[in-house]
Length: 341
Ligand SMILES: *[C@@H]1O[C@H](CO)[C@@H](O)[C@H](O)[C@H]1NC(C)=O
Ligand SMILES: *[C@@H]1O[C@H](CO)[C@@H](O)[C@H](O)[C@H]1NC(C)=O
Image (cartoon, rainbow, N blue to C red; front, side, top):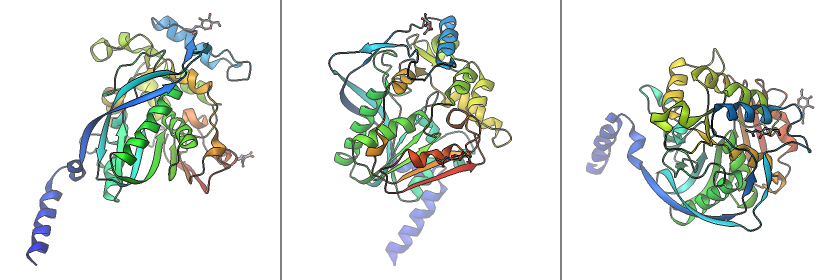
């Protein structure tokens, strides 16, 4: 009886806090050692003239065909071993655990926005409320993770190995009983590739359709700029291979579809949550073949209908193609028409 009363009082006290779920979250630094070959990039990026040239190269009509002019001249002969101390946030005490990987021009704040009134956009707190533990992190090169070399470290296969290391961390150090990988956009590719190498219990992909066909409007529309020149106060410490969007409206075009968003959210994203991505990331993704057939876990593809990079602005009639991609999955379900970008 007394115990019940105490629980009631305690619950009332907890509810009075602005963000109840934050109590169970803590920032963690997770050292991950990876050993993978590295692509050798043949592009250089010093200023916005180079960013414009790179944009043309990556959006050429004859790009992403078998003979495409990927700015890669080869690979290292041997695997390169590196240890990165990944900046992450861990919420909950284990059990069923979601591991979240954000996309490009984003950071881990994507999953847990912190502006006033952001509760309804807060995926992490919603997942915690449903009983999940959550591990979400900044990709190497982003936010609280180390500012790695944008050409030689921040490459797709390296980031896949980092995520595999985080899966191992969740199982061995964070008491995870089951693991779901949840990705957004570029993070969905990382999650898929990791799920093709290590056993997980499910895979949830957003900002993903399985085709690169619609990258050109995304790349051209974002208006790539060298991040350290674009905002020296915020990103002056990054090397010149880190890229961001040209302005708020370019970023809005690639991520939001009017009238299905609040402008204040786009502004917060641009001013606070967005972080540059590295020049090595997209070419190394395009040069890697993900073995989707090796993914056995159930897969959920969840799409805003009007996503630019995944679907060229309309996912209906595109996302249904994921049926032909995840041929080894126990179950594949997709939603292609949520009212969003
Ligand atoms: C773009 O492609 C041209 C022609 O292949 C090449 O000379 C140039 O270095 C590339 N520029 C960048 C920034 O990748
Ligand atoms: C997806 O839908 C489009 C448009 O209805 C259709 O042309 C295409 O064949 C479908 N693809 C698959 C794999 O079902």
